[in-house]
Amino acid sequence: IPVTAAMVKNIDVINKLPTRAVIFFATFVAFFCFLYSLTIIIRSLLLYPMNALVADQVGRLRKALDSDKVRKYLDSNCNKNRIFFGSYNGETLKAEREDTVDRLSNLKIQADLLESSVSSGKCDSDDLYVTPRLSDTDFTCEMLIREDMQEKCPDIMITNISMLSIMLMRTGEQDMLDQTRKYYEENPEAEFHLVVDELHLHRGTSGSEVAYLLRMFLDRIGVPPMKNGKK
Image 1 (cartoon, rainbow, N blue to C red):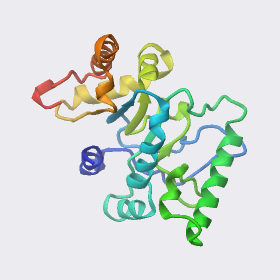
Image 2 (cartoon, rainbow, N blue to C red):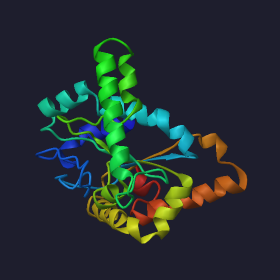
Image 3 (cartoon, rainbow, N blue to C red):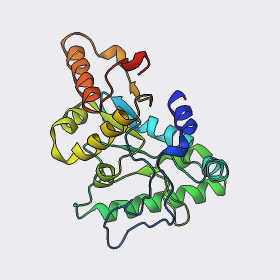
Image 4 (cartoon, one colour):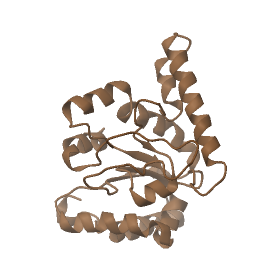
């Protein structure tokens, strides 16, 4: 709740809804290549020890940020801006893979079936958020392709410890880290939200490794812990 509340509070300077929704199922180029933005940076990192713990939380994010009610509210009250989120790990779809288009198409079919089942009363409304809310008419706030997130990173990035370590070393992620660092250097009062799930698991040697990893990440994006007493 604190993360989404902060996002809505500053929604005038976050990612903006594209003027048209284009989903490439036939000739896949980039899922969000028409994403027009005011400022594209990582504003919050949700860190999980393993991918198995992510699915439930992503479903909650879909309901909180990508439901029909939220879309209508953002359209009416927030200049049609959106809060984007995405899971960034080893299972994230890649544009270069031959099966990406088929997997996206299957996700779209699942979303349509869930919409139909909920409308007919065959399943609960919360079942809509089991899968990404892909649609022919509405633009989802969930980013699904790794290259899209590298080029135009989501406001809320969901990842795990191993992937965060890889992100700091691999060249493909350096642009989004550079963009984020530049923003926080130019806006020292801006807040960055770090959420560490299952914190009690990080003890002893492994806990120290995670602590150092987080320090390196925060230093990389220009947000040292407790900078100005409020970060």
